[in-house]
Amino acid sequence: MAADGEEGARLFAVDKWGCRKSKVFFLTHMHADHTKGLSQRWRRGPIYCSAITAALLLLKFPALDIRILPLSTTTLIPLPSPHLLEVTAIDANHCPGSVMFVFRGAFGCILHTGDFRWESGSPNLELMKGSIASAIGGSQVNLVHLDNTFCNPQFYFPPRHVAAQQVVDIITNHKGFDALIGVDMLGKEELLIYVANTLNTKIWVWPQRMQTMKVLGITEFFTTDSSATKIRAVPRYSISNVTLSMLNEITPTVAVLPSGLNCLGKTWVSSSAHPHMPSALSEVRVELHSLKKSRTGSNVLRMEEKESKKNQMGEKYIYCVPYSLHCCFSELEEFLRYIKPLSVKGNLSSSNVNVSPLLGKQSIDENKANHFSERNHISGLNEVGHWCEQEGLVEHVSTHNVGWITDNQMVAIGMHSYGCA
Image (cartoon, rainbow, N blue to C red):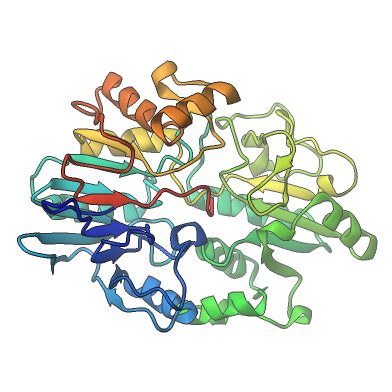
């Protein structure tokens, strides 16, 4: 995001690192799709972020000029005269260090969600609501830049503690098996700690991941000694049918992919559980897209509509559990009803979801998705806004070009694709 003086110079940016005229930059969290463009030689201005994100960022880029924003505290940041920016960082309930930003200034009030989870029943939700209300201070939110990763009514995720227990059930129902849990370099630490505590064991992680655990101060739950445990957290992209087939030729191994990305459909109760499926999982419809390559090049698994029937060989040892770091569709609805912004724009620069809420919340085919993407610069962006207007969640919809919030272009938003789900 970037801001503009009389000559059109953009003054600040969020998760966008190529703005040559921006003076101040903000980072929502440390996932790779939000830091693309940063390097040791990047020198365009100070970067504001949370304390945890700062520690992780310095681990990778120690030469950057990083400024820490305290959570739930409004900070005044001077911009080139006559601009003055108020910003509040709010825990986004996504991954360690992730924040939303509330910006206030001459442009009005803007809420950038970054990536977030608006999880009903979570103790974090009330804290988030209180922090947002305090940061807004009774003002009307002019614009929300929304995490639209799963802006599709087909996506439904249970609370994360429910999904975490499903992971435990899979592992305990495969006694004598080694267990793999697919994760990224950051995120889902709460899940891993829950598994470790519940099963009274440490979890193996690869050396680089242990560095992250050290920064987060949670190394007591993890080990790099592969002989010390049968449960291993491994890079998500390393789990595939072929890998599991090969591993099971050596020793019985089961793998879990905790993610919202591959899971579609609302919860349902099966009349009979699969003999190898934990009872808790029989209540969740686990359904994946047809086989395709993901951004990292790994295979996205196919799960059938029934009780996650498995194909031959490795696939029968892989379970997808709907443990998501992002909001599902109903949570996005609840969030927008709470905020009631004047305008809404999505953050994703491309979407595998291909949903147009403008078209009655129905999925659209690839050709239409490309049409929407070309017309609005980002798939599902203005569609999200118009749907919000139809649903009564916003008063009117912004008609500006995607990524720009006001006529004088005070803020530029970094557009990104799928990160950690």
